[in-house]
Image 1 (tube, rainbow, N blue to C red):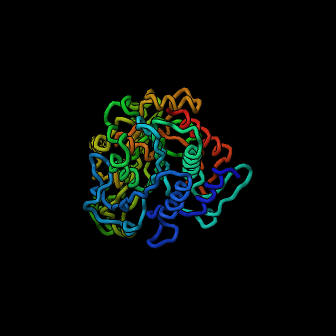
Image 2: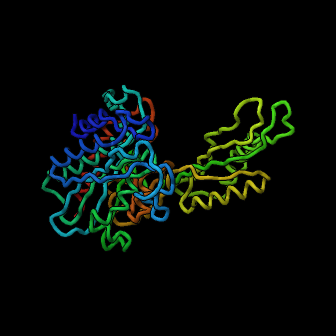
Image 3: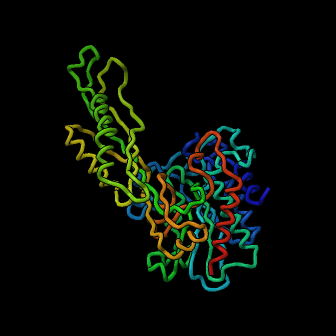
Length: 419
């Protein structure tokens, strides 16, 4: 068993389910146990360790700074889990000389829920099975092992600081990455200059997600919009005296999945991400069969491309509704903006990383992650890690042990190549 595999197996055995997916007080909820365990691992390797407090997830969008997209400690009702201690883990390797560049290794510590058996790591046919194996405890193990081995070696960068940050809450509202961005200038002198020219103090965040060891420079954003229709209640025996809100919603569903989806295909395409998409994922309305429903709500998942904004999508949707003589109010169901990512792959550190990985062209993915939050905060970000997103959140989640070890080696070689 390699050092990387051993660490991953230990992480799988430490449940860190996002509290949003569990009832209050559940023993598997929260990332604190994993953060404490990793802090001890990092400290033994000689890294500087800090636990960065992160406020619990808020129930309202107003709990986030809408201009900087970072966590706010003011206003907003807190969820039942908000008082849990859920810190980001920060482990830093400082260079011997003046810091001239910063590399951030940023996987997330939380997972989605699972059956008890999925927290028992199982090794079979060259794979390691268990919740979080690829999303993203595999990246956690590869990144922290690479950094620990670098710290223990004689071949260390002389002018590059490397910061591992295990982020909380990626699976729900990205409170960890938003809090990190809000406090980044306190952590490193490089982050004070991140809005300056990148060639004066280059900075790069490598966000850990299962990308099959491809360097991803673009991903889609995600909007959850609730469209609510209103009608007039009436007795089911005399429906002509009412107005059926479910019928109106059904017409909107049909329009969204046909005309609107087709229009998106005609008008927009991204060279790495392809088309924006829309999917109706939820519908709820009515109280009982013999009452004409006066309210119905549908929730859609709208995947956005770089350049698309929440406000723009809402305006576009309302315009199309009016053109079809349909009526609905539109509200955002996300706790905070889930923006698309597009990073210039020609930046020097990204080119160097791609060269180390052996990749010639940039790659895009359809899922959303913390990279967009860090990028919005001024830190150029890419996504990289072992594993396949197709295995994430599944009942038999697994990762290839060969790919896990290769991911660690690719990261270590890149970090060793830095001055």
